[in-house]
Image (cartoon, rainbow, N blue to C red; front, side, top):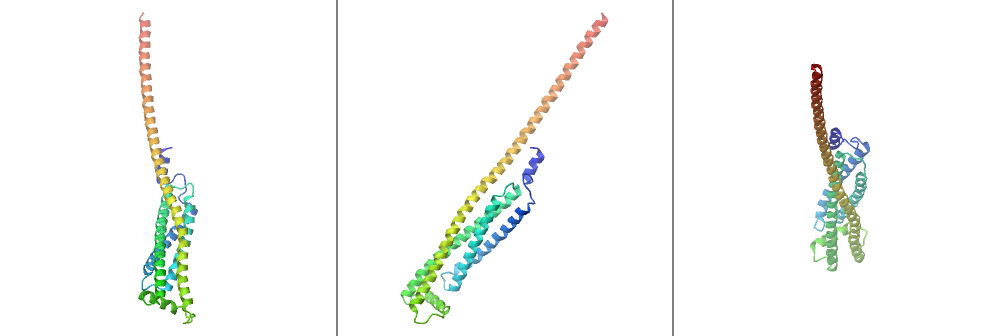
Length: 263
């Protein structure tokens, strides 16, 4: 490999196409989706903080569940795109750096969402326990849960006042349903986190291999240059030796000729 080829390899011009439109489109699309996931995480963080507080309402929990469901779909979609990007062949060094960053950003956002799911699940479980206790005590022992009962009753005007048992069942089922949904979503996300963790590890090994190959090329070219230099020195020495031999031979022939002439 020539020094020009080495320069191309180091600058990301060798073995790929920096203007590959398909790669650029997928890369841009994934960047936008990862940014959307990060924004979703920020909004979810604010809402999850309210769960289990006096500001907690059925409407808030519904918004949290919808947001988490949408985020889960985004995670799955981004995960498929990232895998496609990782399987892309003949990438340049610049493209390798770009997809490494996308993978890293996605993995971080995915872990953040996983943490939000766990936090929301813990609060939902605690809320279910508190609601059960409030219902058992007639809603009088906990002012916070009493407020939640009243809020839910106001949002369900179809329930007759005498349907206390039905209302309690609906309230508990609403909490249980939310918990089950989070648990199911968490199973998908946990699997995706594991997959991306493996990709991150493989990506690191790939980068190290590329850097190692680049260093090997440098060493080989350096050694090759040294070999050429040594060869040039040997050739020069050989030429000099030949000149000396020819000069000596010429002197000897001159002496012989002079001896013959003088005789």
